[in-house]
Image (tube, rainbow, N blue to C red; front, side, top):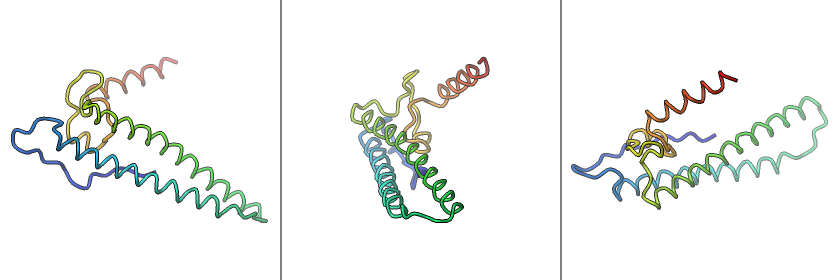
Length: 140
């Protein structure tokens, strides 16, 4: 699956407001580029699956081929979920809600967003959510 890596760091101008139009444009470009990369990979996978459908006589070769197909499909499923997160982030940008924690309303932070552009929670709220989830699963 495509991992996102920021090519550059955004350096805000002196006295630039958090989530200014320039920052929103920067993150829009990151998200759109990431989405295009994922969709391109998805198209290549479709071609690969279509091209490799030739019947294989050897059972080991067939098993290997089926395992490769299964792995590809699981990867595409994860990417489909990631595409949904990217689209949600782009919608938050359009509504000017991007960059703000959905739980506490504080800034998520430029560096965190560069590391994970689909982040919806600030690091503190994310840690709390992860602890709550871990405790929930341990209690089961």
